Length: 101
Image 1 (cartoon, rainbow, N blue to C red):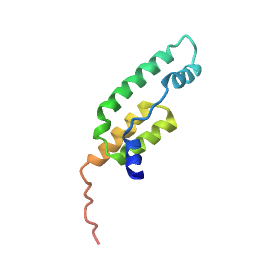
Image 2: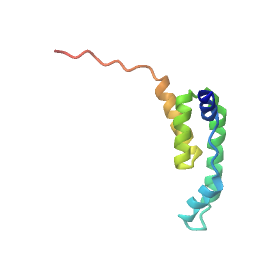
Image 3: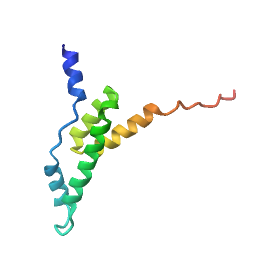
Image 4: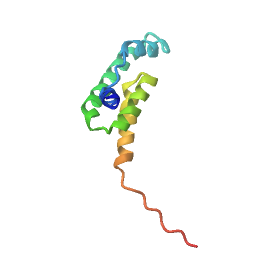
C-alpha cells in the first residue's frame, strides 16, 4: 500500500505558487522593467509543456523533476530537467573504440 501511495505522489505534477516566485524575481530589478509579467508568462508556458509531457516521463525522472521544482520553485527548471533526463534516457549508447594495448 505504501508503494502505491508513493507512486501516486510521484505521478502528480508539483504545485508551485508562481506569483510569490515571480514577485521575488521582480524585486531584483527596476519596477519599470516588466519582469513579473514575463516571469508569469514563461512559467505558465513551462507548466503547460510539463503537463502535456508528464505522463510519458518515467516515474524516477518525474521524482527528480518534482524534487527540482520544489527546490527551485520553477516549472522552467522542471521542464529543463525533464527534457534533459529524457534525452539522456533515449540517447543511443556511446560506443568507445577498443583500447590499443
